[in-house]
Image 1 (spheres, each protein chain N blue to C red):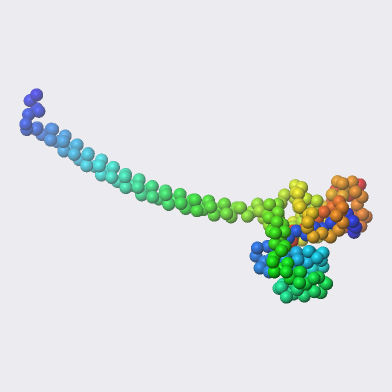
Image 2 (image 1 turned 90 degrees about the vertical axis):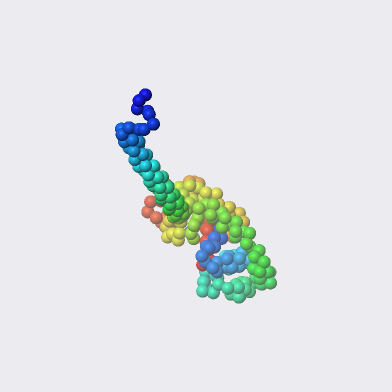
Length: 103
Length: 149
């Protein structure tokens, strides 16, 4: 064809220049996106760490709560009293186990 | 009031933050070896400002214990296994503070007024179809379930 000769015409040059500009901007854009992604990734990582720390703290805070409530008053527990120091007859129908300390 | 219907069993539960509790529990266990747990228990509670070995040796002597044997039990921490077993049991039951009571296995927390014990005991006696002593009926808090019927 006539137009694909050694010298390029003005329209082709303009197209090439346009392409170069578009390419330049998309590369820059892509770079920006990469940077943004890296930064966001770091931020999210930090968030994750913080969240894990907070969750651990919440767990630790929550754990003593049910313990403080203590045994369920509506349940009947087996408490070993055979070898415990006792007051009252061995045959008593009521056994009160007293968990206590001396201080 | 309940005569021969009630037995009280002591379970060791020295709290972690009571520094002098372990020795006191060991001493009471040493006294228990010689059948004098409760008198010793009363002595400890009678003078909680003095909780050291010398005091416990004095109690032992005072209560007519074999002091050498008592001291040996104390020095070798002979009661430790039993105490540790009680502590492990308390923890497995979910007990976190003292005193904690189990009336035939039913949990009563803290230093409760006697009426609450009477209520719990009377409920058990009722369940077991054992007559409730009149004085105990009066002692129980208002709503004892059909106490004595």
